[in-house]
Length: 465
Image (cartoon, rainbow, N blue to C red; front, side, top):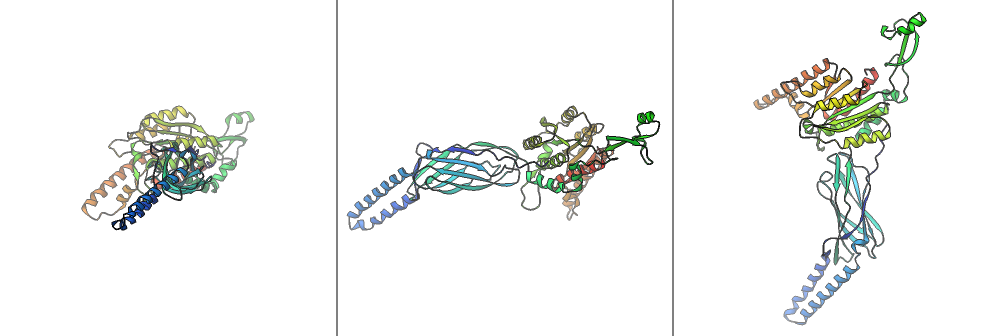
């Protein structure tokens, strides 16, 4: 099941009101007109009447300014809307539309500033808009979310003038709203669409029954040469007095649990080549979890989610269906990295209480290289008697680059040696996990999603669960 395009946030609409006690000002053309009056100062040295002409000119300009001000629409005659073209996702460019409806009798030129948080833009947008009388006009500005979760947008400020440009009014629209930035849905959708075309996913989607593969009982038949002894049904053999074999098929629905560590180690920023924005390890983990969840749900499996730090942040029971997909996306959007070490024991206890039946547990985490065995590795071993565990430790690209590089100077030799020691220590710990039956992987953030999906499909194909 592919997660459908989420509903865009509700448009924020409000009638403008005047800003402050004095909600008007002089336009730039007013000062230009006043400066023209100073032309009469030159002849005033010889003709005193020129001063009178200058004062009369200033009076005409002031009267024109007042007339222009009274013609302008009142602030409450302007209706302002903020419209989202699509739901904001992490690292995905998008557009926001600011729409202004002019209920006045003359057209206006408006300068608009929208209060946007730094999570969406480095600075608030400054827009120019021309709106005819009784009509509606719109302007767009670009946003790109740098963080997941809830972000709050503020008011929209307007400064508008008539085409004459002598007077100006100031207004503000109360368009405050809170929106939720989701994980990278486009990446997950591309990953899913690619894998849907593969043979493995098609077999799961159509649920073709494959006899002899898997451990879900299908039927009984007479024993044939080459059948495994463990597949013989001894009770049926005793009743029929000749060997009877049980036939199995691929399990149609299995439980897949996504466990996300949101502790301090996942706050590390990952530097990708080029000018790509920098995201944390947790952001990559969330995107990988979403990709895997979509593929697993499309294959007919039930998917659960457990995200934790010092406390359990999200605990979503295994399920499937469109509503469950939306619940997973909304839950992943709210996973936040914490500054303290994660409580791995609490997460394991919560998972064991929630899932009694054997299932696939995909644990996305990281660990520090210490003299003792990290706590997260010990708790991963506690899950193996009941569940099949895929332990995905996120590597650090710059550490790998340093370990692979050939040192050129003495200082580089020390850094190279330290990187090699850390890498060897991690390899030893991962090897110990594999010896205990854990499918342990160390993956770079950039290939985390594709590697986990490939591992999941391999597990399904080989009926390891």
